[in-house]
Image (tube, rainbow, N blue to C red; front, side, top):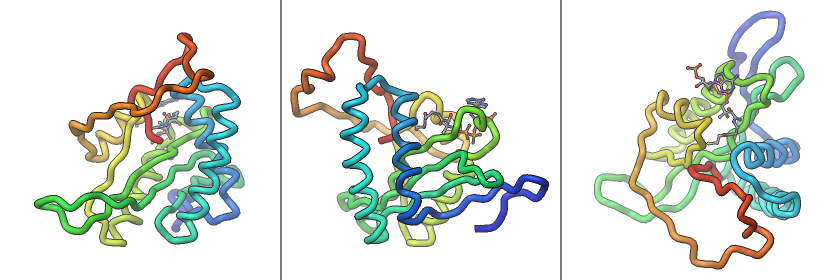
Length: 180
Ligand SMILES: CC(C)(COP(=O)(O)OP(=O)(O)OC[C@H]1O[C@@H](n2cnc3c(N)ncnc32)[C@H](O)[C@@H]1OP(=O)(O)O)[C@@H](O)C(=O)NCCC(=O)NCCS
């Protein structure tokens, strides 16, 4: 993709390749660490599963990562996954784009990187004919998504399993509205 601004240090949003999976996994873990309180063991297990999950979907072109580079530094990333949804009146097709794993390094926040990523993800999904984008917003992310036209829905959820014992400590925060 084209440079976002000219100057001494160039800011570029580029599409991730399989070589970027380590970065995408690291940023996703940092995202979860910022918004919830899981154990190292939970994170390690989730990292391994997410890496395989993302790799497989990247191969089948149903998943894309976007990385913001400032000079040689990768400072932010976010991903989009094309998922199946049920048909409904008023919507064409049975695919939706799900935005996930949004993270900006703390010393680069407020510089518009997440906004750049969401715009790139929207362009990517639109160019594939996907009619809608969904996400779960953290408190950090909600104002950004609202500004870009996202609105609250009435989605509800209920866990169908008992929480594993190592997650059940009362000190644990649970993610309230987390992109996952
Ligand atoms: C949410 C997050 C990805 C936003 O990244 P970002 O690159 O700072 O976002 P942008 O620069 O595009 O948007 C900045 C907005 O964040 C807020 N912001 C501004 N400076 C900030 C700072 N230093 N630190 C945190 N948030 C800041 C403001 O609402 C700002 O809006 P503004 O343009 O009106 O000032 C980032 O805060 C983050 O990684 N948070 C932890 C993980 C997380 O919550 N991920 C999102 C899951 S849905």
